[in-house]
Length: 183
Image (cartoon, rainbow, N blue to C red):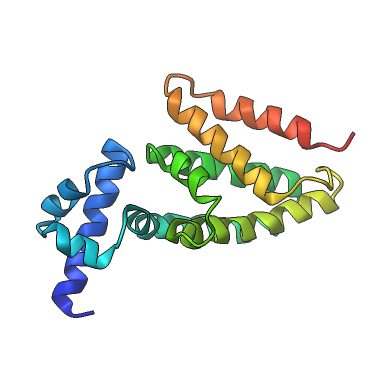
C-alpha cells in the first residue's frame, strides 16, 4: 500500500473502532469516512462492506483473545480456563454494541470476512480449551465448540441489552456450565 493509502486505512480503522464503541456496529459508514477525512469511496476501496470493516477493526482484539487462549491452554484447571476465556469473550463483545448480533449472524456464513477473521480462529482456539476441559472430565463429551460459541455470543447479547446488571454474565455462564457438566 502507498503511504497515503496506508494512512487512510489506519484512520478509517481508528474512526470505525470509535464509532462502533460509541454507536454500535450499525454506525454510519458515511460518518466514519467523514471523521477519517476521506470519502465513502475510499472506505469502500479498503473495505468492500460493513462486515469487512468490522473484521478489520476487531482483528486486533481477536489476536489478544487468541493469545489469551494459548496462555490458558497451560492452566492447571482446564474447566476454569475455558470459563475464564469465555468470560473474556463476553466482556470484549459487550464493548461494541451489535458485535454479538453480527457474530451470531456471521456464524452461518463461514465465507464472510467477519467469520474468517474472527469466528473461525476463535472456534479453533476454543476447541483446544474445550477438549482439555472434556479430557479432564469436567465437561460433557457431547458438547461442541460451535454450540458453546453460540451460547457465549447469546450471553454477550443479553449482557449488552442489560447494562444495569453487572452480574448477568457470571450468572448466565454459571447456568451454562451447570448444563455442560457430565451427569
